[in-house]
Length: 419
Image (cartoon, rainbow, N blue to C red):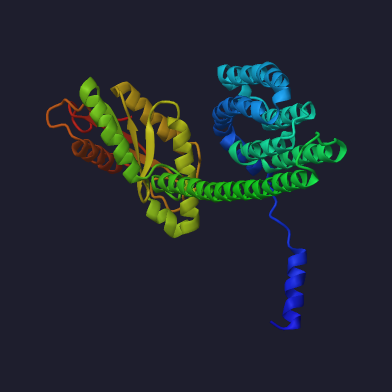
């Protein structure tokens, strides 16, 4: 490596900053906190209960290292620390839903304070002991630091505060307090302090790495979920568009056939008729030739909108059948309701007053309709026959001069009912 490469590497090292433990998007940060809130609370409860048992088991260590402060240790551990800790654990378990409603920072602060309280209690016990072995009691801070930074896994900011407070108390105690007579001397104190500081630094780095990896996993999972949601939205949009006619926005033939098949199956049980209306725009080819295809497309759009308004709210299904043909299904139909449907469609298109200069039957755009009324339980009834009879009725309406409708049914001659 030459000198310039070393300079570049040094500059890169000096400019390096650890990744921030916070998402730049506030909503993503909120989702991250919410995603782990309940799991973290459950972990706090379990690990807190185990830690409380271990904390009190250390009473046996008190009898060895600080025998002259055992009574104080009993009071601090069993009277001052354990009851509030138990109350906190039991209360949180009993009112977990209410606790989860609290801000995350408040929960993390309370949990962090329990760790600080455990560290303070150890230093208070040491301060009241003149045992030669009291100095070694400082080592008891190591499991407390490990508990906070790795077992409870405080968020890094809280772990840093917890670690700094704990180490600060230890250093302050060693610097400003005297050593008990017969103790191992400053060399032992220095060794223990260095050990606690190193353990704290190592666990703090591990805490940082664990949270960083957790955030990266969440970010990857969140991006994947966002992509899945976008794909699902696209799939639903495509499915919706695949059922619609691109020009008019009405259901297309395939979607209408599905509706008709479903209605036919339902009416098979109720034995009530279904009305089907085939609609053809009169002389539409001539309209296209005279006014142009863009005008023809606009004409179909206006007709579709007018007929959609006419059938809305009545349970009828309007669709584009193909080309200039439309189709309407009216469930639970009667002859009277089928006639009203045909009249409303005829009036809706007539009310548009669209100019048709090439029409041999009039100067405006009109429609012809063929209606059929059929119940699934009638002899020979089928969806195909229903459509075929409606088509025959439409053909009859055209032969009669267009701009009209013809109604037929399985029980009526083809031209029995006309407007």
